Image 1 (cartoon, one colour):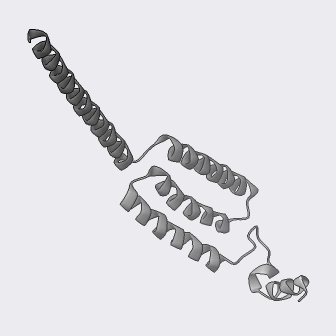
Image 2 (cartoon, rainbow, N blue to C red):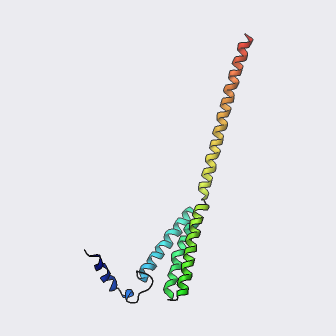
Image 3 (tube, rainbow, N blue to C red):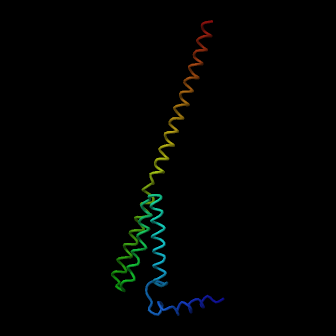
Length: 139
C-alpha cells in the first residue's frame, strides 16, 4: 500500500477544502475535548489532584481557535495552553494528594511506634540481665 494514497480521502473531506490549523474536522476536535473534559473531571472528583482539573479545562479552551482566523487569538491561546501545561506539570510534582501525605504520616507513626517498642523490649531485656548479674553477685 502506498502511504500517499491516504491523503486522497482526506482531501475529499469538506473541511480540508478550507484548510485551518487543525488536521482534523471540528466535530472530531469537539468530541475529543468533551471526552477529555469528562475523563479529567471524573479523575479530579475521585483523586482531588489539581493538575487533572487543569487538563480538563485546557482542551475546552482550544475550541476557541475555531471561532476566528485571527493570528493574535491563535498565539494568545497557544500561550495560554503552554502556561496551563507548565502549571499542570508543576502542580503534579509539587502538590501531593492528601491520601499520600496521610499514608506517609501513618507509616512514620508506625515506624516510630515500632522503634519505641523495640527500645522498650531492649531496655526490659537489659534490666533482666542486670537483675541476673545482681543475683549472681549476692550469692
